[in-house]
Image (cartoon, rainbow, N blue to C red; front, side, top):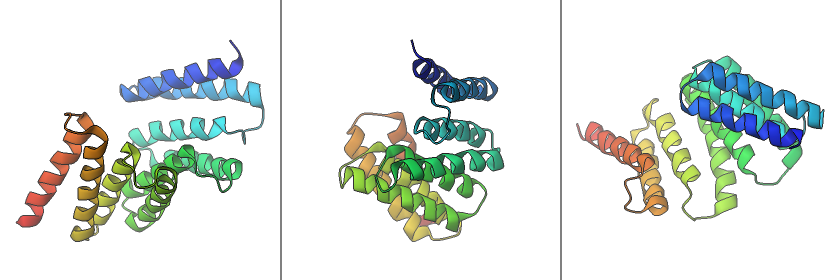
Length: 194
C-alpha cells in the first residue's frame, strides 16, 4: 500500500468520526492523512489537498469553530481554483458550499448567498437540469440564507425547488434527506401562512 492509499484510508476514518460527532478523533485522522499526503506529494497545491482541507473545515464547522473552518476551506478553495482552473469540479463546488455555510452560520447571508450561488452554478454546469442530491442540498441552504434576512418568497421558492429535486433523486422512498427537506418545507409553509 502506498502513502496515498494510507492517506485516503485515514481521511475516510476521519470522515466516519466526524459523522459520529467525534470531532477530536476526526481531526486527528484528517491531520494524519494530510501528513501522509505531504510525504507523498510534498507541495500542498496537489489536488488531494483540496479534499483534505475541505474535510478539516467540515469538522471545524460541525464544532462551530467558524474562523478555523473558514481558514481551512478558503485554503481548499484557493488550491482547487488553482488546480482545476476553469474546470467544473465537485471539490470546488463543495468548497464554495462550505464557505457559504460558514458565512450563513455567522449571519452574513449576503456573502453566503454569493458563495452558494457559485456552487450552484458549477453544479448546474456539471449536472445540467438533472436531479442531483447536492443541488437539492444547495437549494435548501439558499432557502435559509433568504429566510433569515426576511425574503420569505425566495426562501419558499428555494425550499420547494430543493424538495422537487430531492423527490426526483429519491422518488417515493423515505430517504432521511427527503424527510428532513419535506418537514422543513411543511413547517415553513405553515409558518408563512400565519
